[in-house]
Image 1 (cartoon, rainbow, N blue to C red):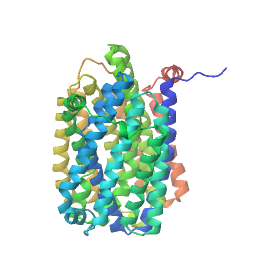
Image 2: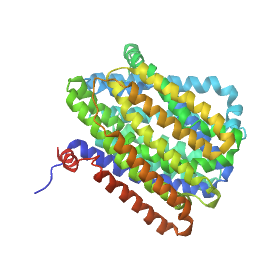
Image 3: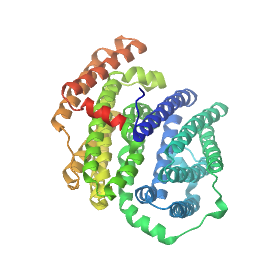
Image 4: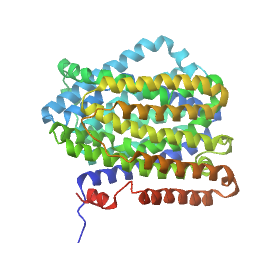
Length: 482
């Protein structure tokens, strides 16, 4: 007899399969970029990406977040009108920002890559415009109930981004070549997705009332997005200031794997928020409480197991995606601190959804702003003292403290049932065991053997979580089926 799987479980499975393919492709891209670009150039490439992420935050104004929060219950006509209004509004913002900053284009690019470059500035503008256009298409598909189509198009985008970027850097062995390829991918995806989804841009309409409604909800959340950027990305500029672009390149590679832990939740965050919003708006608080509790427990169990593997395998993973130039003495510590931070950030994100549901965005903003200020102080203090390890320590400490603050200040209407002491025990045993192994044993084994041994730490962590009864197997099977 065939097992009937729930729609949400199918969506999760499709999402993670998509992400697994995307992650493999991105790691291939890192390997190629680190071989074709110098260490300094790879550092510059990452600084451009960090700047692009900040621009997306500023242009988005978190309107997309409001779109997902409210539009799930809209009529098809209202969804279409909201999509049109958001796209027009954000497009105007993009053009305005780059027009205003155009006289400073040489100074901006010199700050990012170490030399003035008009092509880099223009490519960044194209990237931003295409990125917000594609994101709006994806949000529209999500709120319209076409999650599978959204996931398929995300996979197409991942494949395209890597293929075009690699082609660009192979043709022209510098940042301009890589950016030209990346921008070409965004343009290709925008045209393709517009055609697939039959979007007629001649029929777009704009409603200032819709934008005002979304901004009222979203603007208080802007501080959260900016704070996240500061905590997760701005340290590149401080590393460059105190150490140099080569250190930015090394940190970017070392930071990549442990920060992937947060993907366990963020990949599903939009699906989770869209579905949980319907339950909350229907006053089904018991089910909302159940889902928050189970999602948090699952996230920590899987995240701790994944973090144990990454910490134990820090050296072979780094060599797989780069080369020996990217190895340094403090690499295991970077993996340990960033893994802790990534795990805390995932929990932070899940708890933040409670603030969204109860529309207590100002309290959530306060939590993030406090975490941002703490991160700036820690980075400025620790990077000069401990270098790259100091940046990792600042990231980990910030997210852990931010997560604890979000738990303490969280809205109390929705209860959550989490065995915190057991989770703390699981983290301590799993992460410290993997870390001490990485220090004393990892250099003595081959890459393949190192990965296999690291896998044992992951399995041991999962078994320990079962012994501690953090996850109920029967409950998990019931979720998968229903």
